[in-house]
Length: 430
Ligand code: ZN
Image (cartoon, rainbow, N blue to C red; front, side, top):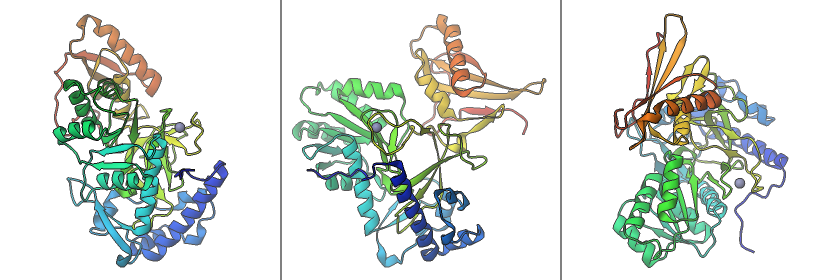
């Protein structure tokens, strides 16, 4: 029988028991090995022996990206340097890069986690995996490569870009799986269509990640490339790299590897857990990471837990796709709102473009008002504007539980920038 990388647990209680052991180990290990963590834990008044149940997680102090930058070049280091066999760094453009150290065990665990991704996507040893993500100091290429070798499929390490070579390899090597970012996947799908390659290649699956992608974009990639299935892969340098979870073929959410880390979804304002299924910030605590363990690391990424068990039967819990960054959150009439929620509604509304602006105002009556300017889709019919606006207003009310006025504007009238567009204009007095 072929080796499985899935956890051995049958019951949720076994998984929780495993998590508690991992949490106790992590706190004790960080306390012993890292002056930074020891200081933090002392400030919070927590000793390793105080962790007696998973609920004790809430006693632990948070760790942030600032802590990583302040600890540059080897932040959160909890083992002697001679145990470190590799470092990776984020491609961050502002400030110092986030650098993370790995022991050999960390590398092995990461490979096992990533091999599980390929298993969940339904690959076997016959598959040929064309890896079109960046190789270098960042984690992407290494992660896809390591996981592929651990899993036992054939890796074709091409790196990003280089469309000519990508197309040639798809034909010559008959690659069955392509790993890349969502925008690269769209580019490749368009090339496959343009060059009429559909019936000369053998591409069946796409594993894509590292950026947000709309429903419409995913549909288009699938249509043009002719692949059978596509899988969203999450990951961040702080938490090993890519491969810490994957969508399963049922696509009911992203299963995450809860036997390697604990995921909390917290309100970014109060830092308390949100009710199950509501949107909040992902906060992660690792269970066996040696060189740079994470204790309640605030990722700033927003998502929500999927509360029902997946119909695929896998015991590993699920979270939703990433819905934006907690820094972009705003509060309107006592409701936390994230631009990702508006993105989501627009991408599921036919006739609406993807560009929008949110204007928040406080009127004489002392109440706050929200106006959302939405572009009509390219080539859309202006006589339908009123109907379109009404449809979006109703969805906002239904999904976000607030009222806003929607104003449809011509396609191309809202500003576009390559960097992050400013979408929220808060005119309320602070
Ligand atoms: Zn599933």
